[in-house]
Image (cartoon, rainbow, N blue to C red; front, side, top):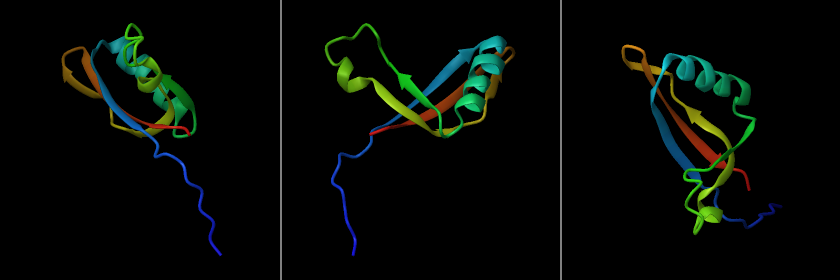
Length: 87
């Protein structure tokens, strides 16, 4: 016998951090990926000044997917993240 629980679908938020200097790219970005892995929780606040819909935009989630750190110019890196909401 199978039981199902109805709940809303988890939201997914994809974003990239571009034009990171060397300290941010090889420091903060890589440290966050290593520390969080796929189990750690993080709170994403896309625009802290936009209070009107903040309760719908902010996401408490986990890293669903990460892309490798990319050096696109001398001293500048970018990285992409995909966050899945924790329900």
